[in-house]
Amino acid sequence: MAKAIAAGDKVGIGPAFLKPTGQFSGRVPALPGDVVELDDLGGCVLALIRWQDGTESRANVNNLARVGSAAMNA
Image (cartoon, rainbow, N blue to C red; front, side, top):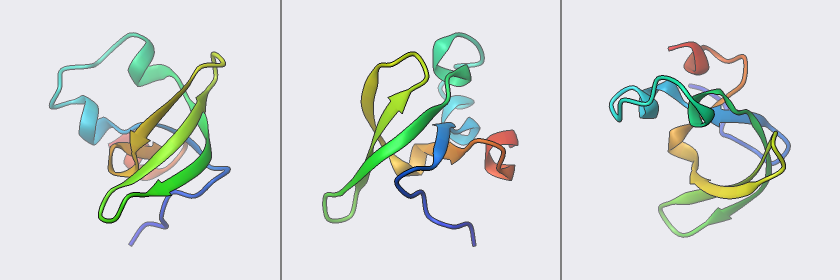
C-alpha cells in the first residue's frame, strides 16, 4: 500500500482523476506543487497545496499523486 500524502510532499493532480475528466493538457495536469498542510474533515482529507506558479488551493488527497511515483505515471 502506498504511503499517505503528507505535508512537504511534492504532488500533482493524479492521472486517475484527470483521465476520466478528459484533462490531458494544460495547467492542471502539468503543474506540481508542495503540500503545505492537511485538514482532516472526518472522512475527507484536504491538502492545501502551494503550486509551482505561486497560487494555493485545496484538493482531496484521493485526487493527488506524489511527483515521481508510480501513481503519477499511471
